[in-house]
Image 1 (cartoon, one colour):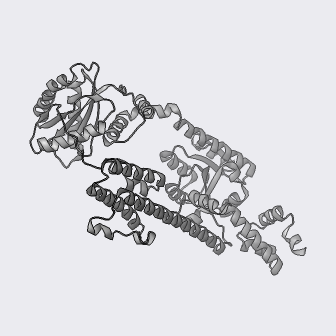
Image 2 (tube, rainbow, N blue to C red; image 1 turned 180 degrees about the vertical axis):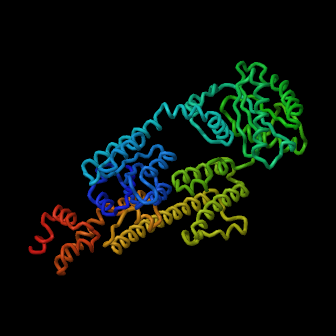
Image 3 (cartoon, helix red, strand yellow; image 1 turned 30 degrees about the vertical axis):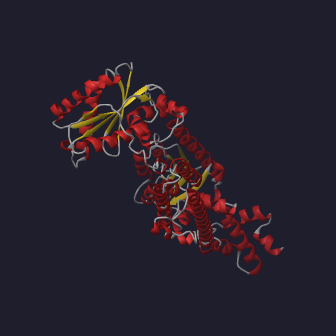
Length: 533
């Protein structure tokens, strides 16, 4: 669906366009209005307007100047010009390359509807072109370096991909790596000479080091790199011929350090992993390199550590607790099924490897409880608010649960209660939203109510407000407004002596003839006939 902005300083023209045109049938779900060009620009900054219908002559900012400003920053917005007979030739010449159509006042609604259809088609065609495969492929190529770095970072963090998913990504990013082929990881730590508060300077140093590594190793290896959360540079190396791969890197590693010292006037420590089958154990290997660098090198500088028997960095750790995405991330995103799957993985590992370890049970308990508490406290609630009896006092004695099974029951039970509370909060919020919408309509029935004004009153985007209202009530806001107006019209016709034009005005219809028309279409009687009957 699309959004339209009507700009005209003649309010009867605007009201007529809003009320008479069947915007929904044209694929329009939100209609905004502005009395001048400056108000239009403010609305364009707030909302994703697809089509602008503007008068040619307005006080302050003319329609032509408005179109020029729109096209300068929003080239995909279609514009339709309204003009009187006197300035039509001028308008046609001035906007021939800017507007999709011109409508001469007084507006012929059928002509306007055709122009809107044309504009919708133009907007759709443009966005189809932008989202087309060819355009997407070109954009992908322009961002290959960043996307490759992201995939490498995901792999060292432990993000899981199926073989098919990883193969597709490697092919998409034009990375010449084959599943099962040999790889090594090279970790490069830039020393304090490169420390700087200027992010740009740091990035230039890192870029220079990447170029040095690529120049020295590029002839022998396929290279793929990223930067980790410690600001280390991580290179994934794969030799065209795996024979003597480790020996080659052992020879070339010191050369990398020499070039960094000589040409960048700084030092770098390097640590290399043994070969493995890609992508097996990439995250584990990376964690081992980081741990070994810290434990073996520490504060020493300019070190090179060749492959050796590296002890796993977390042989005693409960890994599933920390593998991304975290439990807290899933809870904050409302991904309840994924959160349950995460808990299942944690308890499977606890049961398999740490069933008799009270410390690991405590570690899991504290991490899970921390995620629950953080989510609840952000909503200004406590655990006892949503889960009475599920308290944390046992943790003070360092033995909150006797077994992983007991902790399992607590975690899944508490998660279910938190989800139930979240769903209830969402439902209550939507109920209140429907109530506010109806109250606003009831209080402003005699005014020209627009979806834009209503949405601003409840601080929501018009499209979202309309969507939620329909989901909760089964009818659109427009349908509700029309129904209330007709019900009120029936009451006034039956219980008052007000004139039809006064009733029309009281119900927000500025045009009495239009009120009579819609009333008759709905009841198959005019207001006079209805009252007499």
